[in-house]
Image (cartoon, rainbow, N blue to C red):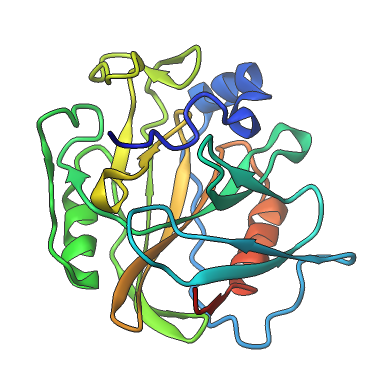
Length: 245
C-alpha cells in the first residue's frame, strides 16, 4: 500500500487557504529561471541552520543537506520521512521537496488507471513531464546543481481550477483516500505521491543524474509569492549538497 505523502497533515499549505484561493483565482503563473550551479552559493539569510532531508520513494538514496533560516523547517510525513523543507511566512507558501520518481500520470486530474513508468533516464522523465497535460511545461534546459548534471524545467497548475477544502480539485478523480488529487507523479515503488495543493501553483524541477540514480528536486511556490521570496527559495536550493546514505 502506497504512502500518500503529506496527506492532510500539510498544514504549511493550508494555513492561508482562504487567501490563497482568492489569489489563485486572479493570478497568472509567474516563473523564474535560475539554473546556476550552487558552488560557493551564499547562505539565504543570517542565522542559517543546516537541515538534512531524504528522498521520497522506495530504495536507497543519498542524504540532502541545505542551509536555511527560520521559518524554513523540515517537513516530515506521517511515516517520519523528512523529505521537504517548507516556509509559509506571511501566508506565501513555498516548499522544496526531494523525489525518486516512479510512475507518472498522463493527465494529473485523472491519474487512476493512467499511471505509467516513463523509463529510467533523466531524458525519459523529462519527456513524460513535458507530455503531461494541463501543466504547460517550459522547454527543458541543461543544468548543474550540487555538482550533478541534469535538466531543468518549470510547470504549473492551471490558475482557473476550482479547489475546495483540503486540496480537492473539482472534477479530478476521487483517490482511495477520498480526495480529488491533482497528481504530478508517484514515488518509486509506489511510496509517496506528489499531489498539488492550489490553483496557480508553480513547480521548478531539477531532474538530476546523481551517480547513476535519477532524482528530482522540486521547488514549489504559491501564486501570491513575491520575487524576493522566490529568490530566497532559490538560494536555499543552491545551498543543496548530497552525501552518501
